[in-house]
Amino acid sequence: MSKILIEAQSVRKAFKRDTQEVVALDGVSLNISEGDFVALMGPSGSGKTTLLNMMAGIDRPTGGVLRVLGAEPGSMSESELARWRNRYVGYVFQTFNLIPVLTAFENVELPLLLTKIGKADRNRRVLTALTLVGLGDRVKHYPRQLSGGQEQRVAIARSIVIDPTLILADEPTGDLDAHSAQEVMEIFAKLNKDFGKTIVLVTHDPRAAQYAHTRYHLDKGVLVDDAATAGSHA
Image (cartoon, rainbow, N blue to C red; front, side, top):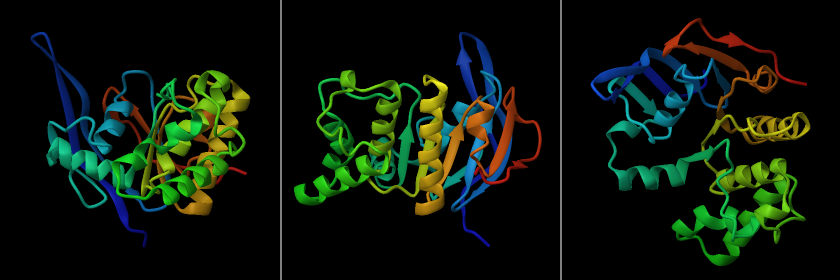
């Protein structure tokens, strides 16, 4: 049996909007095992990004229990969370979030500057990550000199340079054309298959979701069906 890395038990998240309470997640329970590749699907506003953000400790549950890698991110202090994330969690955003005045190399190096890793080891890790995403020849390029697909691949390299246990990706193909989206999803598939990374992907794109082993569907904050298990993508 694979080890369970993420365990959600009746997780609830509510936001206050003026005097109204808006429920983003309403009693979600699921388990994600080590080495799994999971897609969280559902319409806009279904709660899938909220759930992903809670896995990363960006949001905190208002009810239930969420354990990630044996810890409860919702109960950590901000400094504990920062250390925990920088050691175990790689996060890929839809909007790349690259710093325009830094090269691809410098953008990928950023998370390592928060560690005690020496310069030579940092350089090796950055080059390894950029080569893995097919950008070993673009290390000195700035974001403006890259296509959208290349920018997202730099963002993926930045997320994996710490060698995280868990990769969380929020609509990583949302701003990309079909060809670039396919390239990005094939990188995630490789990270999962060849490197054993556990990946949780938020997407509304069925083509991206096909790469996942397991698909969960959320609607209005509720898990609307049991996980659909997909065949591995060729």
